[in-house]
Each structure stands twice: as structure tokens, then as C-alpha cells.
Length: 93
Image (cartoon, rainbow, N blue to C red; front, side):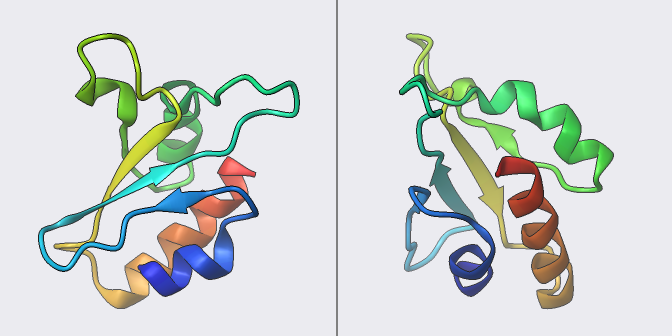
């Protein structure tokens, strides 16, 4: 998944590099006007493209995290990860 993220996401995206666990946290770059991107609003487009993630806002009690998303790599096959990240990259651009 790390290789696919590096290949398929654009400039400004950041993500964790876990040494274990089941998830990667991705942070989106700000919009052209400097406002954070709302990953909750993009989730429907992702699901319609066959990709699911958990929007970052679900992990913050103070309304933060709207520019983040959590991806699971624990169940998907390498082929599913490649396809999914490519689709996600198209949606998030």
C-alpha cells in the first residue's frame, strides 16, 4: 500500500509508515484556497468507485481531522490494494 500511495497520490499528501497494525493514516493537502479538504464529503465518490475508507473526522471529538482518512491494509490482497489506491488517487486529486 505504501508503494501504491507513493505512485498514485499527488504532491502534498502525507501518510504514516506503520511498523505493524492494520491501518495507514493519510492526510490530504489543502485546497488551492488553503482550506482543508473534507474527506467525509469525498467518501461517497470513493464508495461509488468501489473503494472505502474511514473519514478522519470520525476519530476527533473536537471536529478536527476532516483532512484525514484511514485506510486498512489487513484484509485486502495486493491486487485489491493496487486497484483501490489507483481509484482513490483519481478521486482525491
